[in-house]
Length: 234
Ligand SMILES: [Zn+2]
Image (tube, rainbow, N blue to C red; front, side, top):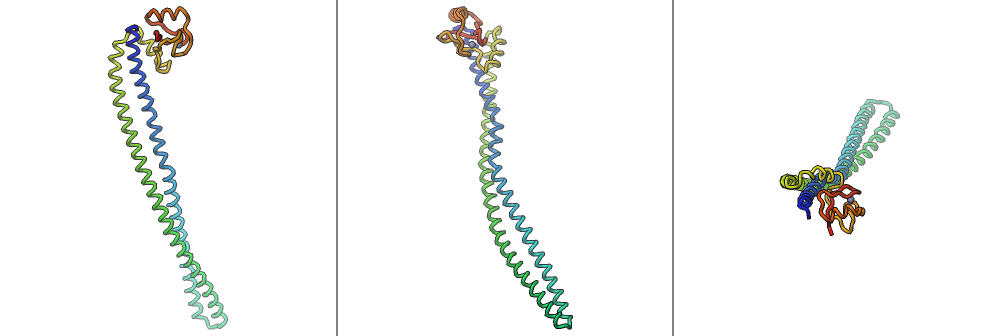
């Protein structure tokens, strides 16, 4: 094999590693977002549970206020009843008082029910908060792992990059610009072997004259279909 091809293949190997590292690094933000997404369901459950607790509290307050107004009314009616001298008015007021007292009884029963409901709602909220805390712990672990992975990739990138400079210096400088261009446009494969008369980069058959150049090891031979630098792989 031509020394120039050998040097470029070693360089290409490094460059492909750098590409893989860059791709892995680019995936990390998506993985982080996916990890955080796992919190959405639990966060929503906590929000709903809190909302239910609050709505129930509002309802309890409303019932308490209703009881309060009725008690005030009962007090007023009792005063009127005390002050009246008419028997029929006394009786009418008595009926009204009884009606309001029944109302108060009903409202007090309702208040007790709501308070029992509040216990259940608070328990549900606690469960939802515990579930969220558990998920948060798992997500934090995932995020810590991702941060570790990111650091490892960055460290390796620096190392590979450092080694790459020396390898690039060892490669034939006249072929480097072509190599670099091909690496970018040909998906990280600038130098490929020819096997069975075909370029393994684009899988097209090479014309006879090119094949002759490949087999006799002419410097800088390119596939006429894809432009990649080719060497004999048979
Ligand atoms: Zn080709």
